[in-house]
Length: 265
View 1: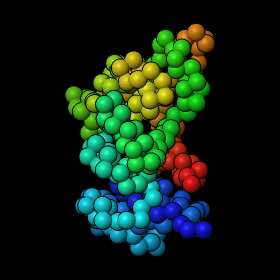
View 2: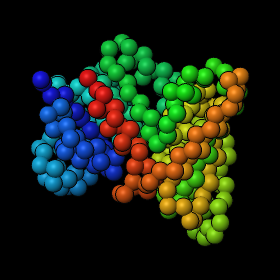
View 3: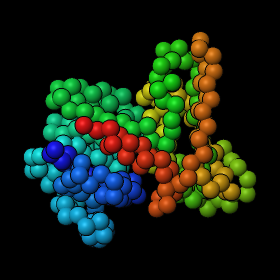
View 4: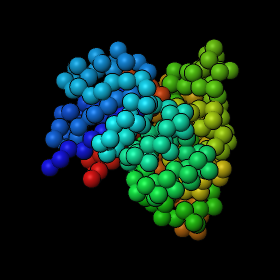
């Protein structure tokens, strides 16, 4: 059986966890052809540890000259999705980790059209939450939906929406954001991707309510989803370990991508 050829955009915490898993568990299914990342030296060291020899580059153009990529896995940034996703879908299937980019509904619609036009798959993993199949089943009956995320202050450093709190000493839990998923992802693009994922399965970014709580004592990332409608009510609670190398994201984010790859044909 021919191997499936992969390209990675971004070689941070999520990519690292994925490639380690593929190397150890699915070595005969995938061939990693190219990794694009701004930090070439770091990526080279990782590849030496994994004993793989893909093309390593910091230029997207080097992906474009590859003619045999089946699937591109993006785990870099919202801007990477906005800059490259449409072009990728004209050549390859695409899995997007930075789903915050999809809060732009016109852009999301363009991606779907591109996927259909070129008969390439657009894959959106569930990320750090579950229950999305049930939510999708009742989406037309939802009258209210909210996700409340609780994170440590350290995991929010660097976000636009956290700037005024970076020198604040948190002694107790504090609600620091309340608004729509569209607003949330613009202020916390690396922290609240889950809100956009939820909105894609539910009622859209404008009507998905988001609350972000800072807890100085929390050691996990917590997400609580509540929705109501003609069907009744639903509650989902997740308390997830942070990625060992990136506290901004849950370890489940990479695991959800790994599941997508296990199912990929």
